[in-house]
Length: 249
Ligand SMILES: [Zn+2]
Ligand SMILES: [Zn+2]
Image (cartoon, rainbow, N blue to C red; front, side):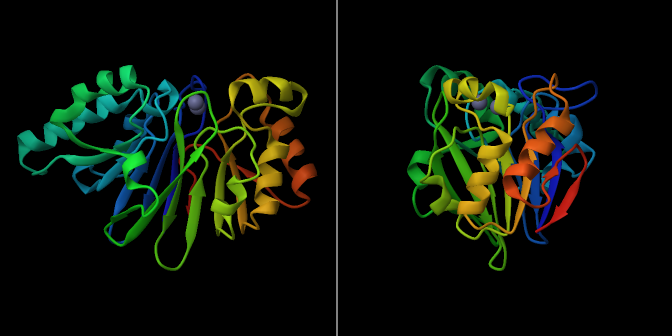
């Protein structure tokens, strides 16, 4: 399967960039993981909306879901021109309720499904199997694993470090992990429910993953500092993603 990075910044994009958004595709299915600020413009440069089979929102922070309204209108335009017949399945947490109610305005474009209700068996989108694990963040948040029957990748969503996450990561071929906070600001990472690059590396080591990719960068940090912290902790190469990068899993 192919992973395409549509956006990698948080909580606001870098100039010309976008917040969290990742397109996972194989020959049979295309799934959008998160839809933060600016993601829909990037998505449209990669795929026609009528080829999108499902959308997963890890949590209701705007850098992961703000562009759902833009996507809603892109979907509705496909209804109007006849290129899309049915609503696109949208997998979201059922909490916080006030956020859910706000996004329910998009029900004319998406069929809503709740991540709490598809645990632990997950869902099948085409021949991709998606599984979810609750992680630890300020609001209910889910990590997503995508398995095509041969390879498996895991996207962290936003989370603080916790040991149990390594069982979900177990031997994934690729781990796309947030690395929001520099080591010097570790206390803030704990308080805000985020990872430092070194913590992402520790999860990757304990989870025995094949490849570690870092994402979810604060635009005010120097990326080379995050990169250096990650590689010191990991002891081998780590890649920081950027928009339009594609990875074969
Ligand atoms: Zn968040
Ligand atoms: Zn975020």
